[in-house]
Amino acid sequence: MKATDRISVYRLQAPVWEFKYGDLLGKVHIMHDAIGFSSADTDTNYTMEWYELFQLGNCTFPHLRAGISAPFWCNQGAACFFQGIDDLHWSQNGTLEKVGIITGDMFNAMAQWVQDDNQTGIYYETWTVRSDPGPNATVWLESFDCSQFVHRAYRTLTSLGASLSSSTQTNYTKVFLYSGEPTLLGNASAIFGPPAMQNLATDIRKFYYSFRPHQSYVDFALSLVDIYEKVVVHKNFYLYYNSEYWHLPMKPPYMQIIYEEVPLP
Image (cartoon, rainbow, N blue to C red; front, side, top):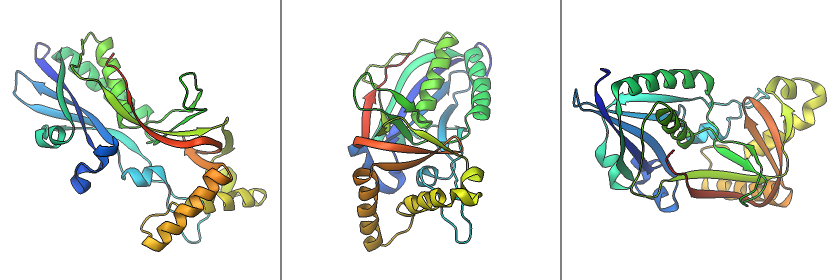
């Protein structure tokens, strides 16, 4: 952008999978976040958002392949930048709100930051793992998703001199798991190779088998019962985070989806 360009910044939010389910997931506050930009000089709009490159389900749970012990993960994530803002998509069931104006210099510096951020954060992480729901809870493992990218981008713009404000409450979706202190188990090579780790490897595969895609209605119902037994009754959860497996000793309320307020910086 030209250094003297004045670029409007927009807060964008819409229900996850709106293209398929409309506002269904929006009713339970499962939302996707992005940022829009509009250049005064060129009258051109742009959208910037952080995506799970192989869809949310594949980033959250792996595929189990016959004859291969280690689960197969497709959990890459990256910031995507493209021309245009789909006004109807964002405004119909979500948010399209102007929150500030930046210069072309600020935009160009932010664009460089996005490239650097894409090099350092390449995996999508759905879950935030906390010790409990209270205000003084310990965060064991932080999520790395679309809303976290938006927060980082807003903080970067502010550090570059931007002033951002919203006339509405700025809420974002967080998916929490609650557990005692997680135990690091190791990476795939450490777990799914050595014979001494065979029992752990089998347990991890059995755990993720209940979350496999494309199940029949009957199998899905049976899997829900199995998940309840593993997570609630036996208080076990295996989490794949930063290319390593962790064991979570689960605690009530086990899981929550919270639409929490995070003010603009």
